[in-house]
Image (cartoon, rainbow, N blue to C red; front, side, top):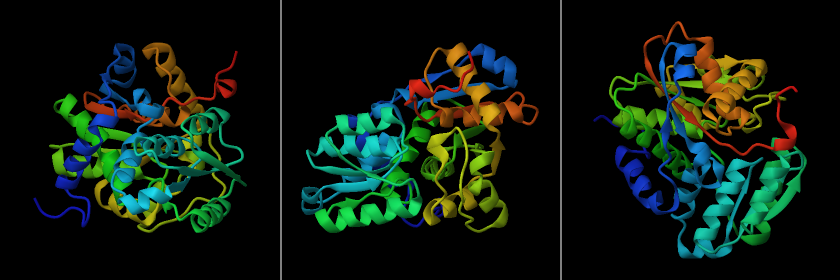
Length: 320
């Protein structure tokens, strides 16, 4: 096979899968006849909402933290995240018995902050801007010597996230397409590489809220266009692509589909009511995109990665 990515190869993805296997779940793939009827497709949901820490992010964080050398590990790890990556790094740090320092915006969901603290990580609050997050994490690194693990723009993290799509391909034969949400692009980029190496005749789509559509605009422009003032119910997708993730997505992702918050809420409700499982709003974005484009995907076998289930139950979007 020709070189697809300079540092993330089929071999490094396989190695990551073996490395993290003792510490993450091989999550189930579920189907639902009602959703199949609504979409006109056979839909296979890879349930990363059942993953350790309740989200796929455990894969990338564990892969990255396990590769720190002893000297790096001793000083701990640091990151900035509004939620699931924060929990993932906190969890991964416990596996090596090291300290995690997590910079979280003050408006991060309470359920996610409490979960991070539950793993013994030190939470450092900051104002909810990317600049504040980056400045604060730099200060933490200066003070502690901790190693920074970026939420998505990191080869080890992207490689770990790719393992979810690897499993989906192993668990479901003959997929025509895999769809994932896109925020920073670690999962979408990793999934695209997994499909490029291990998939046969399978395409990859990203799904994104209209209120945070930097990936859609960047893909169409052929260059990175960061999002300013994102506004969407999908709080896990507020971040913009990084240069590493954009490069992969630009090369290997066929399309990004954008959906409204109302479409996201409808899709989220459909999953809750019909599949009887808890998913967070970001999770429902690919299903919303599939429903919006059902004519295009009629009769196809479509894999959707359900990214996480860490919902703040005090802020559910469903009406009475």
